[in-house]
Length: 399
Image (cartoon, rainbow, N blue to C red; front, side):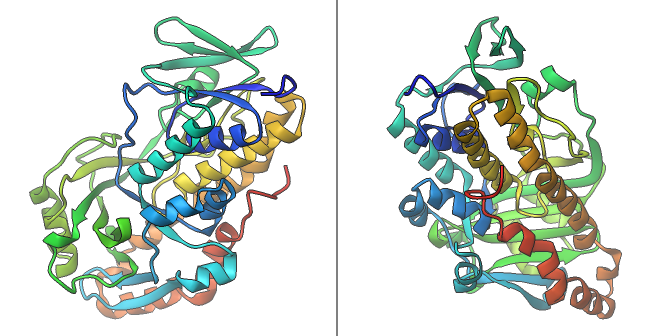
């Protein structure tokens, strides 16, 4: 590594931290990434990556790899929770590439995580440090200092907190956040397609909307799995955890009055996980001296816009560009933040707005529901909600 380049320490080896690490290494910037887990293996189920996110992955020379493990939908549909009445939302096949230059893909989180890990290690085999529980960070004597729970410290030119929604780095800089329970809990899990009746699902991403809840499902791994996400307005579960297990019976009960397709999917989830959804106000500042944040550590959002992981990937690339293009590290971090604040805050708000849109009480009456969906998912309404997201180019946006 060139001596003129900074050395960066990153807390957290999730999707955002690994994207940042890979983007930095490709620019000749040395990185060490510290992960609290004793072994690498991303938890979670499926997630969606729209064209603004796949653009980042192709820019990082991962196109051939992601094409092997993704599922590319023909489109997206909106369906009424009980009648199954259907409206097209997007054509995501050839139209995504034609309009935005890149495809819309669905991934199992573990699959994309593994590709990023391998790409990082191909450039720097010892970049990822496991069993490293980061406790906080500060700027001290012109250096960034990453602190660990065992009392150890690492000095670098910059420290980046990519340590997720409960970020210790964020709390060490700005104190604990103040999440608000939304009154919504969510189910998620995956289903082996061989366990489902033939012809149950079409090759599209589907969003069922209903009074007090919604369901999203789509294929993963080239069609071998189905990802299930179901949200219900319930106040009896307020644990914000990605690993708390529920039961199929409880999940099915939450959707007992929904369409047969939804009930069938719920009954076949391999390992139903449930978590409470918390809402947070966007941060107005997430950088202090030589320490900054990215992804859920600074702009966590409800999973209703399919942009949480994508925003983290955009962050990672634009952070790398800033540190590569701007010699002064503190200034580079400020410029990175300035380039991301408005966009990520808009995504946070868009995600919150969709909670109301997807769960509207007007959806209870089939006659009223049809008019509501016609209005809310009108072509112009869809464009206003999504075009600004999909057209963004993190490879060239001003910093």
